[in-house]
Image 1 (cartoon, rainbow, N blue to C red):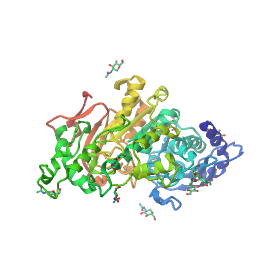
Image 2: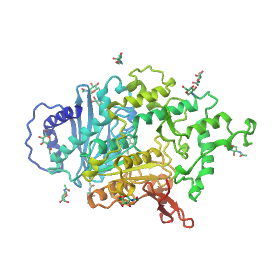
Image 3: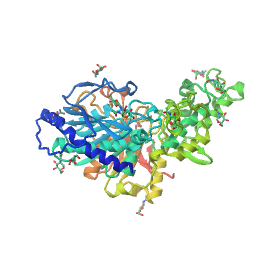
Image 4: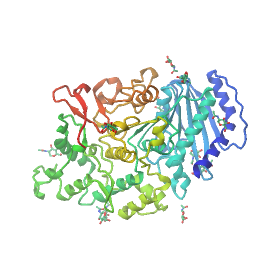
Length: 544
Ligand SMILES: *[C@@H]1O[C@H](CO)[C@@H](O)[C@H](O)[C@H]1NC(C)=O
Ligand SMILES: *[C@@H]1O[C@H](CO)[C@@H](O)[C@H](O)[C@H]1NC(C)=O
Ligand SMILES: *[C@@H]1O[C@H](CO)[C@@H](O)[C@H](O)[C@H]1NC(C)=O
Ligand SMILES: *[C@@H]1O[C@H](CO)[C@@H](O)[C@H](O)[C@H]1NC(C)=O
Ligand SMILES: *[C@@H]1O[C@H](CO)[C@@H](O)[C@H](O)[C@H]1NC(C)=O
Ligand SMILES: *[C@@H]1O[C@H](CO)[C@@H](O)[C@H](O)[C@H]1NC(C)=O
Ligand SMILES: *[C@@H]1O[C@H](CO)[C@@H](O)[C@H](O)[C@H]1NC(C)=O
Ligand SMILES: *[C@@H]1O[C@H](CO)[C@@H](O)[C@H](O)[C@H]1NC(C)=O
Ligand SMILES: *[C@@H]1O[C@H](CO)[C@@H](O)[C@H](O)[C@H]1NC(C)=O
Ligand SMILES: *[C@@H]1O[C@H](CO)[C@@H](O)[C@H](O)[C@H]1NC(C)=O
Ligand SMILES: *[C@@H]1O[C@H](CO)[C@@H](O)[C@H](O)[C@H]1NC(C)=O
């Protein structure tokens, strides 16, 4: 049983680090008595340092593909970096950032894509908010899936063990460092980080009291299958079906908006509920190809129209629904239509499914999709609908998903919610007690987009990139603080107030705001008010 063997590693590992931590504690003027026996240390501290507020920390050893070479630390922080073996053939790099202004809260950050990268910006954010914050590298360095090759231990770190290890070690260090245990434990992550949050809720219900999981990469194997199947639909860049990226953005997206933007009653470039959009590209077909579009430069062929229709269909494997459709609206930031196999899918099949770096990913087809799902290494699917253990210990989980997400279909978060509802036999008012899903209109993958997408999910956009004093701590418009209030005061968020800043720059002021509703309620314009004001919209029940 891998979890147990890990636990032994983690608990025997810590004592060796304590003398180094003592030095750091001195920097804060704390004092505490330690009584550890330092036997068989497996973990070791690389270094610990005191980082004064405002320091621009650089990470010279960090893998360049992580694209995180520096981070401004916003508050007085003790930074501890450790190496922790997770098996004989795997290990994690782990960091704990302990702020002087501790609130008694603990938080783990997550990762993204197939990485391999500590998200320093999230560590800076949470520590500035007063959380004792940890992060780990998910068992490998960099964004490539290559370290998975022939090493299921690294896959196991990626599936759950890196983060769970970081949580256990981090909670222990927190108590050691501050001299009292944390009061409440939180999680904040998006994408793969969203999947990691759900993994904890499903399988490690003791790890957190409150989990904020954005755009979760849940049903992971089917997600990668689905990501890969678009190449088969679009064909490569010389196929008759292929449509260049700029035409997705400049031709298809405006046509989608022309058909679907005003379904919600407001033409603002935001499709409030893409489930209501049944897009038909036929009107873009050129006159000379039998269509009605006389604009020779801005028209498409019959073959391209057929391809576009197929792109927006749900994804079936061997006749069964495997993953929902990509939502119309997401083509404003297209990702899958490059005419090449999607990189994460390619890596996953080469380095995990087939353990063959030279595998020809151009030929992947239905039998490969089925095999990947069947393999489901280390239960990475993260698809269990039974959250009763987490619910029973009063855990709360908030998921959010951008409705214009071009990387992970927002429809899949509804599908997971419905799955939990079916599995646990709970209707939405019963799920509301511990699990809420917010649909963020006009938001792309985790952040960005034309909608009111700033919801406190990251440091960027929370107003505090340069100073702690400017951070937005309002639970109405900050999902993390909303979770803190839910856990600690029992006040659950009814809506999440999103903000759109002018040019997405906080200092330039607010362009508009919109209160995003929890699923299955639908945000509905009142028909008369100023649509840039949140009070002109209401969360209404709909027939699904
Ligand atoms: C932390 O781990 C060490 C080593 O296993 C153990 O002796 C200590 O009791 C733990 N501390 C806490 C607060 O769990
Ligand atoms: C932090 O330092 C790095 C490397 O010297 C530099 O590229 C970056 O611009 C600095 N960041 C800030 C906010 O000053
Ligand atoms: C610590 O918190 C106090 C009170 O909230 C605040 O005034 C101070 O600026 C904070 N210090 C740091 C270093 O964050
Ligand atoms: C960490 O694990 C990797 C395999 O994922 C291995 O190549 C590396 O040598 C290990 N590092 C140490 C210091 O053991
Ligand atoms: C933990 O919560 C208790 C009760 O609310 C409070 O008295 C204590 O100060 C908190 N601990 C920390 C470290 O904030
Ligand atoms: C990751 O990089 C660090 C150096 O930053 C290195 O010490 C560690 O062994 C690497 N981990 C793996 C799994 O290769
Ligand atoms: C991976 O394992 C397979 C089967 O054991 C072996 O044939 C192959 O050489 C290994 N590849 C690498 C890069 O180690
Ligand atoms: C999609 O896959 C099918 C079955 O493997 C194949 O016949 C077809 O040519 C592929 N289409 C494209 C555009 O790659
Ligand atoms: C596209 O696929 C066709 C058929 O497999 C192949 O002949 C052609 O070289 C490919 N073109 C590109 C740009 O990859
Ligand atoms: C034709 O389509 C192009 C590209 O979409 C567009 O820039 C142009 O304005 C269109 N011309 C007319 C007359 O509609
Ligand atoms: C959900 O179920 C509870 C208990 O059966 C019931 O009281 C409540 O009315 C239901 N709510 C909805 C929205 O169906």
